[in-house]
Image (cartoon, rainbow, N blue to C red; front, side):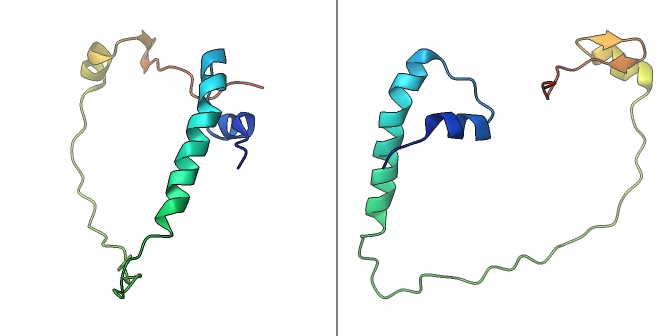
Length: 93
């Protein structure tokens, strides 16, 4: 099985070094082969699937006081005016 490392790194939003580009395909192929071997294990006659209860357990909202703005800004590692400055999450294209 051939691993499309460029496609996977784009999906995961990863920037890989040249060394990682050389090492990862071989490592990933070994992992995929190992996982494929798991399907050949004899598991006996036990039930393979169990029904899981995914119903939502909602709780009532509780109104609680928040911290004063000056306390929050005092704890912030970096601020801009009356706002907490955080690292950019998305890159502009």
